[in-house]
Amino acid sequence: MRRGAAIASVLLASLTGCGSSGTPDAAVGFCTDQDPPLPTFTNVQRLLTGICTTCHVATVELDLQPAVSYANLVNRPPPNYTTPPTDESCGIVLVKPGDPAGSYLYQKVSLDMPCAGGRMPQTDIGLPSPLVPCAQALIHDWIAAGAPND
Image (cartoon, rainbow, N blue to C red; front, side):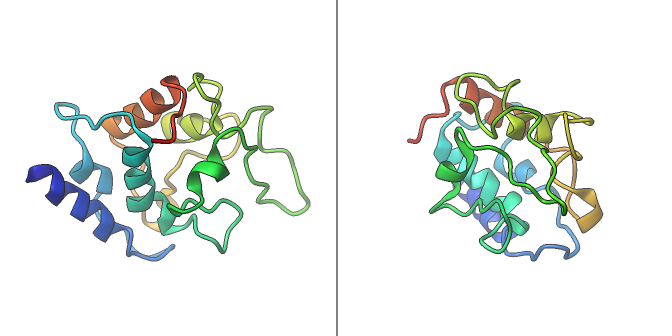
């Protein structure tokens, strides 16, 4: 029952709009270091829905909504947010199956100074940063397992 309540809190957190005042880190209700979720894409998507889709929806270059997020992440280059266009990819893809360190997504959520841009989620729009360690570990472990689409 506790996991069901945690999932519900993550889904409720996804209802906030980009730029609105943030709620406590949705990942805290989703996982703890003592009770980490299994590294499945289903759990990664729950995390994405609870935190990342606050901004990353169809109206921006990187849509992380459930119907399209896997295809938009795995073996795909990072989107280009700048005008004029610059290469923010650092020569890597968003998710390189089997290689968390070589995956831009993992760099963006785990490093204070990723190869380009800033750490996600962005605190300047009211979201907490960094993700709690178990949320970072979930992304790491899913990528390390080959980024399966379960």
